[in-house]
Length: 491
Image (tube, rainbow, N blue to C red; front, side, top):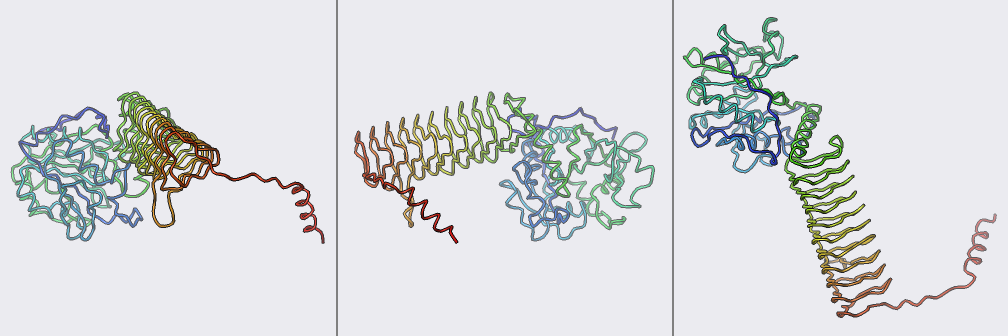
């Protein structure tokens, strides 16, 4: 047992575009990961469980799980409160263990004793500390593996330690115990002056941990079982307890209320944007740009101010998104531009132009070089390669062939009051302004429609379709209307 291992600051990218961290050798030790996710989260004042609140588009509890897996950890179990369903936020394959009552971190880990007894190494993470990174976890597990200690605690030094548990060391510099500082009487003045604090992340050899948990006491001011209280028992049993000092302050950024949540999300967003920029993406104004954790952006893309990229969105090389665009669960192909528009569950392929003020709804597909211009709405439709819907149009449940042009005010009337019907427009078609296409209807290749046409029947290839609506002028109408208005206004 010796002094703690100190590492330099770790840049926590929180993004798949970064090089992967060096992985802990899960094949050797297959560590069990316990994510503490119990508790009521009453300070959130929310009907949604605290662990399911999103951080940069991802449920809070999913962050430490995915970071541990990326670092090479094995079996993962979340420790939850009775009757609290967190399945919506847990990645696939995560087990759950119920903590019968809210009796502290030690009680939470005791609830997982059957799993601990089946393991060799145990990693304990906090579900409400989402910004711990795979790189930090990997370094921590390697530090534990490299010592003869039965337990390793992650620590950090803070100028203002607040209510964090203080790390008490013996004269040799080894960890002796952790003194809680949550309530008056937990720690004396000398202990409160210690700046090194416990971050709530631990690695244990499973067998000594199981033995110490069985003897854990709740004789403290809070009447709770504190997990760090296993350290003295481990020392009495002849085991060493080590500390690994992290250099990333984010390991202490926990979420207890919505103020904390906003601070954590702001830091997570900053790190995501930094990672994208270092990978070759231009983010013009990081302060006004929101990018979720699952978003992929290729180098040479440009993200303009006021843009939000959310969910499973991808942006290709050389694409420009924004300003003031929102893209959810959509693909923007290389070289495309999305200006001041809203895209949801759609695909924009290479070299397309979208907006300004376009709305691409679920199922919209723009083939290479297509355009959905100003005040255009597209829903469940394919716009062919090189085709243009320049402005003021609605395209719903339609197939538009390549190199066609839909004039301003084109509407596909796709709903008859009972079902959605499809419109099919061929290649090289010219649709005149203010054309109404009453689905189901087909317009053949190289056909035309006249301005203001109402198309109810199929249009043959190469034909011009017009609909008669004779103009009639009513002479003297304005004067008669003025007389009527004066009569209405007279007493």
